[in-house]
Length: 207
Picture 1 (cartoon, rainbow, N blue to C red):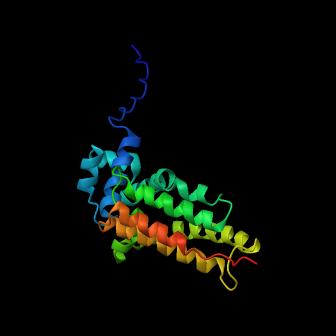
Picture 2 (picture 1 turned 120 degrees about the vertical axis):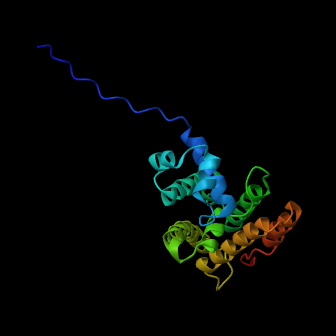
């Protein structure tokens, strides 16, 4: 009797799309519409893949959004990490505001802030997305508070002003910049907002 040699397992079919390009396309859809309004049909069309391929490569819609948010923070918000290396608290604020201005003024990016858009649009059925975005924001806020605490110890902040309060003020400015960019403000108007904010940035009086 002739014995057959066991066959090698069939290799999986190679993906017919580039993962990085597909994720970049998904980020753009989420950024434009927010998490809730980004439909699977729109996502798969933009990514150039089928729904089964999306699930196989990225998981479900929520997992895809998490990966898109990672890409957004890594590429679009890289300036936020380097801003904390500025030698003064005002320098940190300037780098953050000008970094945000550059991102929002770019014709290559959708307008507004992905985090702000997604949290504002989330309903009760997508609380997990809102919670995840808020948790990431809290981590960034904690790093900024720690940086401003060092500025306070160096005597940079006005008497009675706490680092946490100053961070909330700065974040409000940055969110306002994003919201105005998303609502159609011109680059010139956004520049005026940044310049005005920096001109009134609180600093300790000189002795």
